[in-house]
Image 1 (cartoon, rainbow, N blue to C red):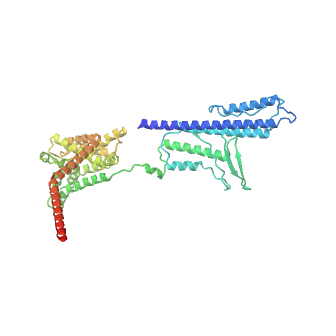
Image 2 (spheres, rainbow, N blue to C red):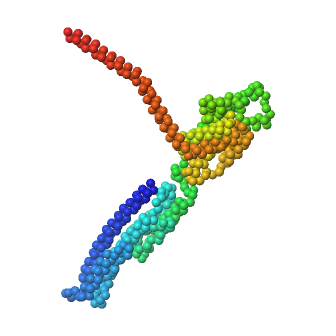
Image 3 (tube, helix red, strand yellow):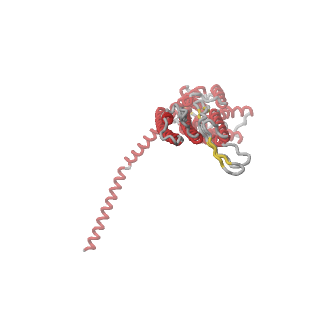
Length: 505
């Protein structure tokens, strides 16, 4: 794709260069025509200014006319790199009379300034094309700031504002404004404050731009410099228009997962609280009760039905491998898991979608259950192991996509600390649940999309098989139904034909 983009950019540059060359050729032709017309006008002026008594032009006059024509032709034939130059007509012979200064110098000066201005604009446009960076367009807020900064200050009398003449600014590859030649011509129209009459002033090659034009040019250069500094910085100066480019974090599936963990934890402890409050069980001491609530997993019916145990798996009941990811040993394990899920779940859901989040959670929980089974653990819960697996999945995907690990967070560090404590002191968790969960989460960071593709293939093949079985099973009833419909139509047609025959007789 980068090679295609470069080829397209090269084609566009070649087309624009060809257009620039064609335009320069046309302008050179126009300059040659203007130089030839100017030479003819000068020749006629010199001829008219010769003495009337002379019936035949002097050799000096012929030489001056020929020199003027040759100088004009040479100026028109100069290459664009040398720049257009118009040589003024001067007489070398003392006896030849020069053209009137009031007419010739004015026409030559106007022609000179016009040609130099056109050539300078061409050079500025070509420099701007070469120095134009290939980057995204500016934000609307920065464009408005540049436009507002380029407007000249209002006059003190509140009268009509003069027309703004903006000299083209050439930006170099390093972002600095290149100085443009002073030979470009600029014109400005200003209205007088007293009589209300407008006067137009034109600056030649030697004169600089007018005061409003210079102020506008300086303001425009300052605005461009501020815009470049804003682009090079962190972009904190943007207003509300830049919010459209911000990424929207998705947390819908993450909130559902957190609520499911809370609901399972409440269902685990509900029978215990009911028994204690009902008086069926003696209430423990406050310290022991708090420790049990923070670290223990009550052996209630919900826990027994949702945990992973060897007997259920050996009997073919693999549902406990998935449901054990929602079980937590105590309130402390639940809180740090929810804290970690608030980042990892939102990261996976925003970057890859709900399906990848679900597959990563199942692979992390399955890895925790597999570690417990391989370690010979008879039963186990994998909630905190699955949370660690999601941390590993985020780390692997961040390295693969961005080439760096995600930043350290308090939630992740707290999860690791509590998980190590649970692996040491809680036999239903164990160290192999943490190792298996992290391995499963890391594998999900690499194979989650492959697993999703495999699930789609399996679902598609299953639907196709179901449709095929349905067609096979319903083929005979459908054929019998068609046969009955055909027999009924034949019998009805026979009865109708008999009735019509009887009526005809």
